[in-house]
Length: 214
Image (tube, rainbow, N blue to C red; front, side):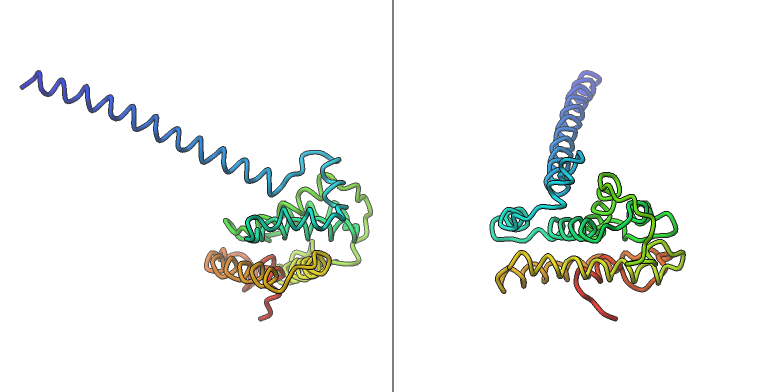
């Protein structure tokens, strides 16, 4: 009996080690895929990268990055829209940094892809743009302590920049519908995840991206 128990323990230990190795391999594969996807969606690592993407006028190339296999990638669209919009308006870098770091309060919903793209655009702009101006006349409430005021400006800015990029990209009606429909679905999925202390009834990035009005 002791012999069989010994054999069983040996086999079980080997099985455990193999399972752990397989689990580790799967984790590494998933993490590598995630990192690769992040690099595709948010491809800025240097000031040269920023300058190229923030001033990109090859809209055919941009469209290829947004639509893959005839399916839209809303996170890429949002990233380009905000990055180019802020560069065009010359939003002060310190303002973008405050929004990205949520210095005065929450601006983004956790695990929301729309929020993630918006936040990354603000962060990259703040890091790489040479926008040293001090005034913030266009969107004075982006750094307001009152959540409703701050979120309203984020939603307004996001709606403006996404609308402008839609015009420039000249999507077909079908492409526009697919993109907007997916954005609406993404918004609905994350609205249930609003933190209790978020400070407003809606997600400003999601509302701006989908042109949602209460």
